[in-house]
Image 1 (tube, one colour):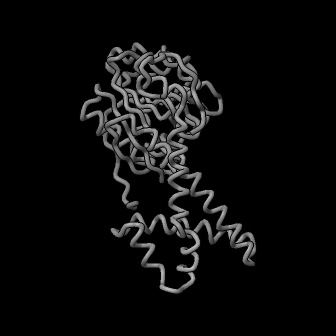
Image 2 (cartoon, rainbow, N blue to C red):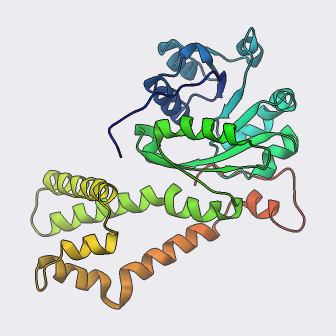
Image 3 (cartoon, rainbow, N blue to C red):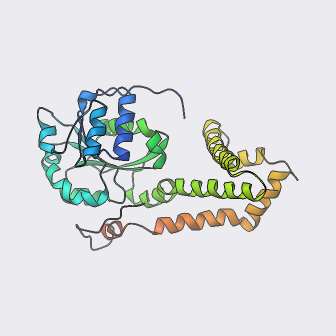
Length: 296
C-alpha cells in the first residue's frame, strides 16, 4: 500500500455505534486521516469503550438521546456484535426514515435484515472488513443497497479506506465468497506461518528464529506482491531456480496440484458455511427474525 495518507475532507456528522476493536480501528483511522473529532460521536453500552472514545477527545455516551443532543447525524456506523443488532436497531428507525445513511461492519447480517428493521427505504452499505483492518492494513468489501447514492458511495469509500483497501461489490450474493477468501483468509495465512515455524524447528532452527523468519517472509512476500505488477504465478517462478531448493519444496506442495486443490476445498467449505439467517433470507420463504452467528 502507498505510504501517502490523504486527508478525508467531509462535512458529515457520524454516530459510531460500538467502540470495540473494530470501532476503535475506525475511529483511530478517521482521526489519523484528518476527520474533525467534533463530527464524531460514539454510542456504546460498555464503560471501557466509552473511556476509549473519550481518551481520543470524542464525545461518547451509553445513551443515544444524549449523543443526538444538538447533533444532526448524517451517517450511522454499526460496529456492534451481530447478536446485539436486533435489540439496538429499532431506536435508529427514525433516523433511517429521515434519510440518514447507514454503514454496517457487522459480520453475517444480510441487507434484508437491516431493511426489515430500519425500513425498505433505508440507504445502507454492508461492509466486510478483515482482521488486518485493526492495524489499518486490511481490505474491506462494500455492498450497497439500491437506495445508496453516488455521493454516499464516495463518502463510505473514503471513510473505509482509513483502515486499508476497499472494493465494491454490486451483488450481495457474492459476499459469501468474499468472506471465505478475505474475511477468513487471515486464518489461512496464520496457519501458513504456524506451519512454516514448526517446519523450521523440525529442520534445526530455534523456535524464536523460525517464528521470526516465517512471519517476516509472509509479510514481506505479501507486501512485495502488492507493489509489483507481476502476478503471483510469475513471482513464484522468479524466485524458483530449476533444480534448486525452492523447486524441490514446490514439487512437494504442487505435486498433483495438491496445494491448490486443498485451498480450493477450504474456500469452498467456508463459502458453503453461510450464516443461517443469510440462507433463509435468500430462500423462497424469507424470515425477518433469524439466528445470528458471531464468528466468521
